[in-house]
Length: 134
Image 1 (cartoon, one colour):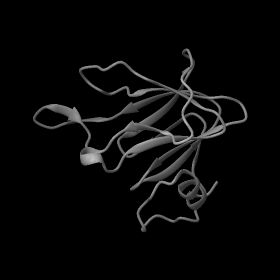
Image 2 (cartoon, rainbow, N blue to C red):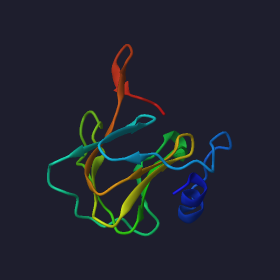
Image 3 (tube, one colour):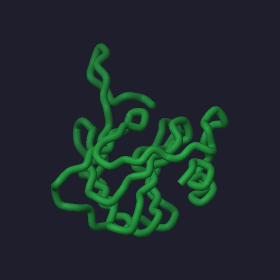
Image 4 (cartoon, one colour):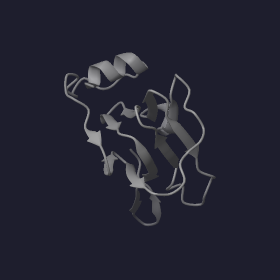
């Protein structure tokens, strides 16, 4: 799938500087998208079906730059319980025959193949440890 097809299908706008005709990178084990990470795991899978409109994994500051998950076929997402660090937004499971698409206005998209993944966030060390602002 190319970026233009993903953004049109899932009604997500991305910035003009991105190559809208580029194929989405395919995630089989691990990848990062800005301040988000996707890591394949062998833990229990997610069980909550993602709606047709997708789901916001992490909302950007002031409502912009949201990382959103969409399914090309059924996919599952379980939001993690709130924590002090906020570094583990949730678990994604992509069944055989489906692909998950992680979209972001500044970073474009990733195509995630079948498997179970831990979706995480990065943090930075400044005067205090804090979540990276994307």
